[in-house]
Length: 249
Image (cartoon, rainbow, N blue to C red; front, top):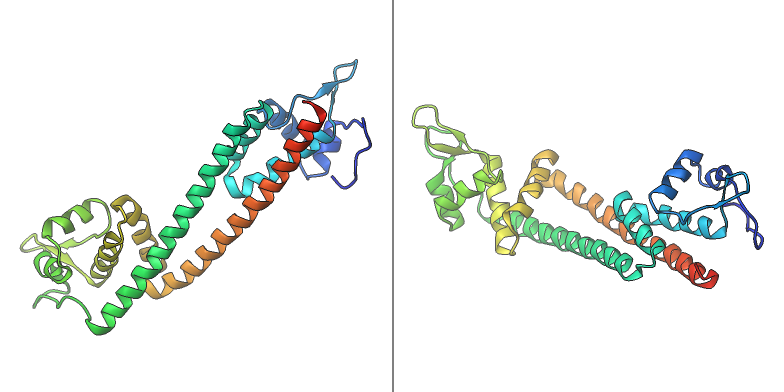
């Protein structure tokens, strides 16, 4: 809101909505969802809101960017039901997910450095004569893993070898070799296949390792921005909880 409310001042739905560029229907929806405390009513049945509702709306809108609309809704609903510990648990889970994302990003960066260093000293498995790639045995041997592991990675979508039309054997092209090397580095770092598969998809989408470095820089920025929005949301939620306590709601 652009102004401070006087003690006991009442707002209409349109007043509450206008301060945040929302519709009055959105305000009613937020109340029905438990994001806002129940509105007061005039003798004629019209909704009225107070500074407490302003604080709830501020808290919710500040929580959304860092926690998602669904989680922010659950946090506010818990706060309005005086289940503060449940609200804090939801916040803790979001912070834990952010920490996991940071650890995965760090692991990817380490794996990329290791992979680029390895490629600089060893260009990788030599292509089989007569093909434009390498077969499963030589690739597995070069990585120090079993062919069965590469087949498992294929089922997980991490590598996508083509089939030789004459023999039916798997043939891994340069991109497959790159993805297998990166997956191998990540597995050595303790990451699960279900965590690795979406990262490999990002490598493919970026068009290789060098373009991925720019994507990782953007990823850093997104994580930092999310961390800051979580701080903002926490501050607004704390202010709202204090006002609830002071008003005895």
